[in-house]
Length: 338
Ligand code: PEP
Ligand code: MN
Image (tube, rainbow, N blue to C red; front, top):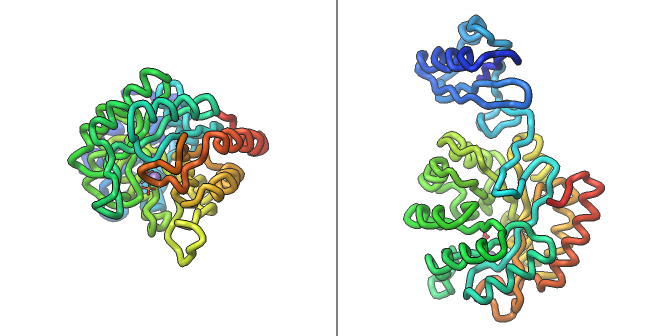
């Protein structure tokens, strides 16, 4: 249920409405909109009697939210959310490119790749410090040392950095160092991790689980927003299918559906979708054409020596081509490279 306040409602009237809703035992969550404030009613068990809220001062209307995801839903916020990360904007009319290696492997390597991707069009640097690997014998990431290198990359290049918190145990540490905390595909329904992300003040990049429906993905985002963090960036990264010509199958149709269902920005990771570098550029072009708000791409200066995901990491020159191509496509879709 959404209690929509009149355009000229005062902050006292909004507070009074919040108080009246909470008096009934519900949670009231004001959502500032372009023109008016709406108050989303959460934690109601069963239908709520609209007439009670209609008679509160400065209430314009009461609308039912039909979707199970409330705060995430387009119904509760008509305008696209823009997530600000320093001076970089993600969402509504912007096309934001994040790039870097799968894992941080060394300081010199990370700084070299960061300089290369920045020069070619990246605005945010990616790199895993804690890696969720299928095999316990594979490189697991440098841990805190990797986070320190990410902080150095930010200091030297000015680019904000994104890295994954693979579990509850490392969340605090990752949060201290990075500008965006990533929740990986394998953790999309790790509800205690989602609740922890909801308490964070940092933006959260929420990857779609490899077997998750769009509704499950948006419900995962709802956990974060319900916890109080509205800076959520969704990321489609391919789902598992019977195909073996690619690592996963990029679900391009998810982008227009998510944009219709939610106000949150949605970006695409063509690297983990593809698994092979030659597929990454065409998939990235397609992702921009269907209207994503940005990309997160793996790039390495020496992919054949990469400690993880070398086969899907672009050479810097391929990444430069990709940035040029998507700039042209985004002119047509009217998103400005940001
Ligand atoms: C990653 O981006 O480093 C990663 C592991 O991705 P995903 O969770 O999508 O597999
Ligand atoms: Mn990877």
